[in-house]
Structures are given as C-alpha cells and as structure tokens.
Length: 305
Image 1 (tube, rainbow, N blue to C red):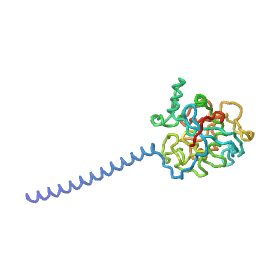
Image 2 (cartoon, helix red, strand yellow):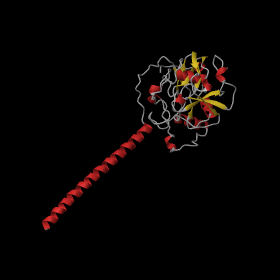
Image 3 (tube, rainbow, N blue to C red):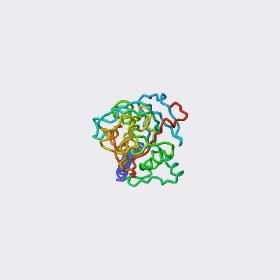
C-alpha cells in the first residue's frame, strides 16, 4: 500500500511538473509575442524609410543659403503645365504657365527653426488646439513646423529675408515641367511620402527630408505629404480660367488662402501636386507648415546640391 502511495505520488508529481512546464512555455510564448508587437508598434511610428529607388543627381541645380541658414534650390526659368483636367473642378483647366527663375527651400521649416524665429521676434509659439493622442508625439524639434497661420508663415519668411512662394511657383517646383501626378512620378509609392497611415514609417509627422525616393525633379523634399504648405496666393475656385500666362500671382487679396502639398493626414489621392486646398488666413492646423521662396535678384554665392 505504501509503495502504491509512493508510485501515485510520483506520477502526480511528474504530471504536475509537465503541466507546469507547458504553462510556462505558453506564458513565455505569449510574452515574447507581446514584446514583438510592441516593438513593431514603436518602429512604425518612428522608423526611417529606406529608399529603394535609384539615387538621382540634382547637382545641375544651383543652391544658396538663406539669411536664416537654410538651403534653397534654384528653380529655372521656363514654362510648365499647371493644374489637372482629371482632378477637382478648381484644378482645371490644365494650362501652360511661364515663370521666371526663383529659389525655394529644399526642405520644410522645422519646429526648432521656427522656435528660433519666435524667440528672436518675441512671437508666440504655435499651439495644438485639437489632437487625439499625446501631443509630445507631434512636438519634436526635428519635425516639421505646424499649427502656423498664413500670417505666421508670411512673418517667418520675411524674417528670413524671403517670401512665401506663389501657387504657380510651388506647383512647378513640385512637379517639374511635365504633368506628373506626384513629385516623383504618376504612381504613388509608399516609401516616397508621409501620408495618412503608418505604412510609410510614420504615424504622424516626420523630420523634413526623410523620403529620398519622393524628391521632386529639382531635388526638393516633401512636396508631397508630411505637412501641407501655405503659399502667397488668395483662393479663387475659377482662377485657372483667367490666370495670366506669365508669373501668375493669384486673385486679389482675400481671407481665403491656398494650401498645397497634402499632409500626413491626407490620402494619396489628396496628396497630388495639383490638388488645391483653401483655408482662412488665420487658421492654424497640425497639418499645415512653411516653405519659403526668394527672387533670383537676392542670389548670393551658389554651390552644388
């Protein structure tokens, strides 16, 4: 009887040990899976996107440094096709526009750069009015400046010895002389722009210049996605039907201004370079930022890109 008790106890011990080992293995597997999912989540919000496209040479385009120390690219004089007959009504008709040469910032203004301007001019920093997540995920010095009004953007560019680009200048710099749909071509590429979703590597904002594959024909970064950008023009839905051929500057001054380039909240359809947005000049939004232009007459020393 005693031997049977020892035998039964041994069997129970072995069986219990087996169950415990299985339980530990299941728990460790679950914990490893949770850690993997967390790591993937963090990576999807912050990772850099590696370009798979062939590197292009933009050295034929002259550059200059703005008064605030930011690099600009010279966009050459000449004609280009503005607008689209396949987009929204205010993008039509497609029409030829001739622009004199100008300079445009190679990258969007960052929050650190805007902060320097705000401190030197004693201007208030932008405020995030509405955001469904932790605001610290948007407020990073290396991210694109956002939540600036048209008036703020004008003031920043003037402080930097520059100006806001016209709508025509912005579109030519973004698409080149042809009719490309996006800065890099006609087909959307996930690794070329920061738009809605995290498939491109960023759930929200990205540091300007993160998408090598998305550079425009002149080598400018983020003309599609990341933050949309104010331009100098007032908005008129039917302006393309009456705009001049040479250096159009938009309709008479009005409260509604033009925003270009889409943003991290837009779909790929709304990130087309011909897409036009309108907003009140006082509006601030976490999707709208700044890129400045300058006339060639302001050109200083140039160097290769």
